[in-house]
Image 1 (cartoon, rainbow, N blue to C red):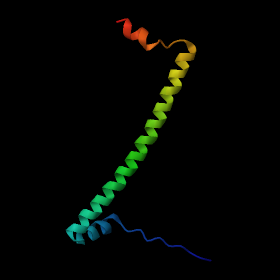
Image 2 (cartoon, rainbow, N blue to C red):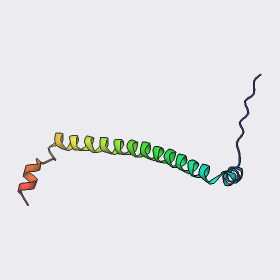
Image 3 (cartoon, one colour):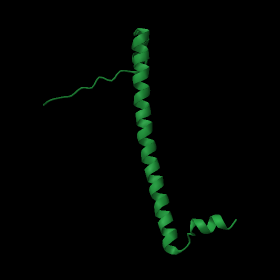
Image 4 (cartoon, rainbow, N blue to C red):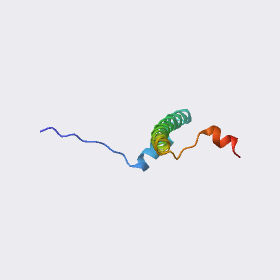
Length: 79
């Protein structure tokens, strides 16, 4: 039987190792982590935006089908 062991370090160990890095490597790590976080953020925003936009499109189509939507020209020309 094959066993797989994962070595997970405590946050305190990781922090200590980061403090021991030369400053240039610390900044390199910060840059890498920031890029990773922004990438995850972008993915989440795109996903959330797509869902919200899709819901708005469905709502607009329902309003058009039911006759509740007014033409934009009608709204703009009647203050």
